[in-house]
Length: 141
Image (cartoon, rainbow, N blue to C red; front, top):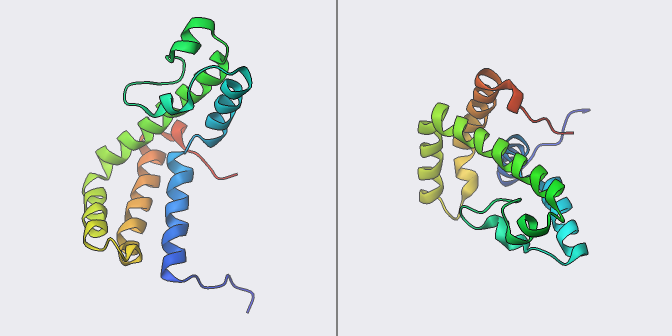
């Protein structure tokens, strides 16, 4: 049988959501680098980067002394790329995204029931990024 083992619907749903994380980018390496810097220098507040309107490089400690400016800049760049990807999804896959959200609200306790919708949305997302902004493509690696 040399094929890939079958996944349960829940496992498949989680796999597709993991693909979204790769495509849309969690900015994990940049967040870790920034967090390490502010923790090692005892400056800044990592929670601050998640406040509306606040971005790395604009936190008071970074502006004042520039201690983690490089890491803050990398994280801000990642956030900007991620927002560009989200913008493409909203623009080119809006109705699919809405159908997925409705399905999730109706099936909150059975997210795997929305597998078809999320797979369709994922494919649209990949196509939108590839077609409209190939420089934003992110590959798993």
